[in-house]
Image (cartoon, rainbow, N blue to C red; front, side, top):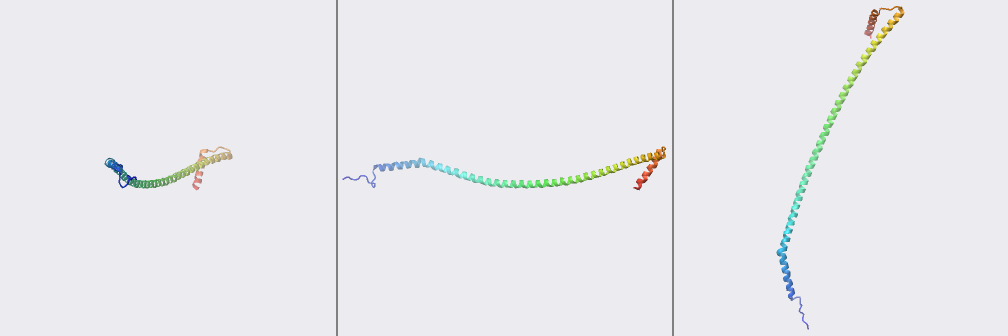
Length: 168
């Protein structure tokens, strides 16, 4: 009969050697590898924490800048409205001034035209009077058949014309 030498309740020498090797590997890992890994993880946590804090500060700055930008845009809009209102006032003033200048120029032109018409009428009357005087003298010469004294009769004709003008 064979006796079983391999019983899991009674470990043999290889099992003990494996446990010792496992404990040595765990000890080496705990002594030299684990502190390096822990240090790397702590550094990484610090980097992540500082990155999150920087992101939060950046977010706060962005929110602050957005508020400033909104304020600047509102100021720019207000300034644009003021500029437009001022330009409208100036345009209205210029329109009114142009209208007044136009009326004044119109009145001056009408006044000048009236005086020119009056002057032209007076010239036409004078020319007509001279022509009538010449015609009357020519007609009188033909009727009488002899030449009249032009200067004396011209004075009489001028007196008659002045009397007619005075009546008109």
